Length: 229
Image 1: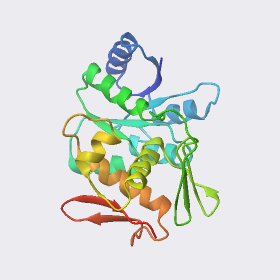
Image 2: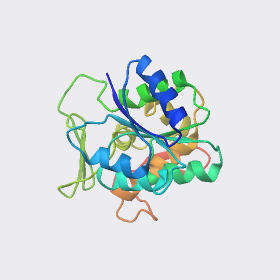
Image 3: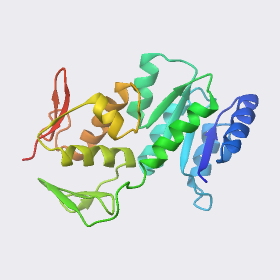
């Protein structure tokens, strides 16, 4: 049973959505403000598998909560937004969200998104010791860790799975739709902005100069390619 934190200031919506998610097999804790959400996540006695975060919150808004969470936590995070505005979506993804859902939220759709993210949070293959070396990067696909020059990097599960795809297909161009299927586990035409935002965050962590990437190259009109030094 997954443990979710729902951050929503609309008490009626929070009650309805949390009840529906509990009916679908999840444990749900509710926070009405960004401050309450951050306090909940800092309490190590209350583990959280995934955060459902409303963007429009009083005080500390959802974007700021997302930034603060990502500064120290790798917990998966889905943004809930009442607006499908492209700017809001991009800002949210750049803050470190793994996905977003536009309100009004259909509980079974949200349940599917939650399960897809949690599935990719754990390795799908039987454990085997497999360390890939790319320049000064080392990727351990059993421990699900990445180090650069011997220092462990703080990557989310999505970023690690994205890097695994690039490393295992080094030299090949991977399209955004292919990455959505393989990394996000989406069997439909998902939002390619998820890929672009995740690649940008990954570059910021593994590239010496993210603005001039040498490992993850963009192939215009096609997708991305990992180039080994």
